Image 1: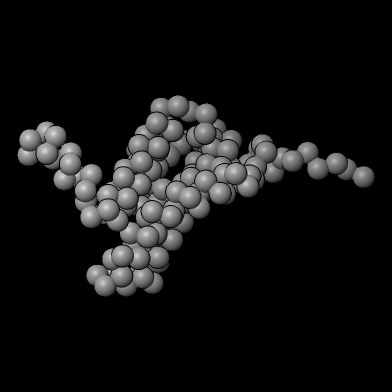
Image 2: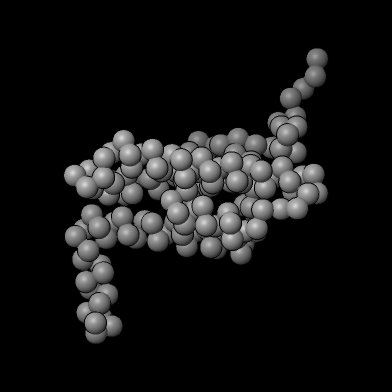
Length: 144
């Protein structure tokens, strides 16, 4: 009987989403989801969810393709393209792909930009939910 090594042949290493990572992903989605819900009079909820799913799917597939190319020595997807998908709203899919495929998780420069994008989404969502109080306070601090 062959023992499962925990390796996924197509990925070349351990893969899978740990419960703590899944929980973190859900937590990160709370504020943006609440903000989108508040915008339901402006943007149809089904359209908003469809857009997020489409962008996240594109980011997920982009990470997967880049991981495959990395394993086979092919030309890689430029990081600015991967970040563009994240910036356009696909960061949840990129987060999921990074955890499942263990891709780009050790490259600090990539993670720095990725988490800046996530933090920007969190900031905007929370500030929107608070009635833009943080933005108003920041404008007062810098004298605008």
